[in-house]
Image (cartoon, rainbow, N blue to C red; front, top):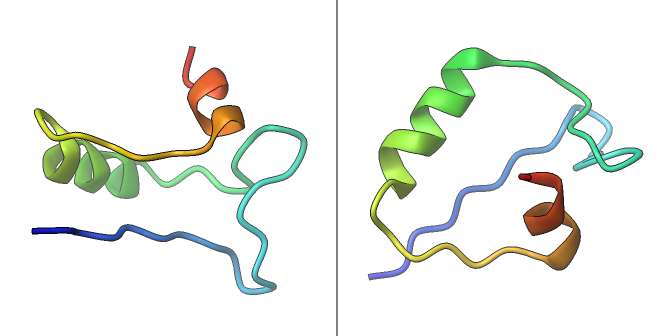
Length: 51
């Protein structure tokens, strides 16, 4: 099974200056619940930005 999670602001912005343009704790909670223990595919900058 393949699950996609996509987030963008109202102008279609996904990220700016290597950060997300929003802070939504419930979104992070959802992302963690869905992805914990799963394989995640992401871009290099996203991976590097996660620490």
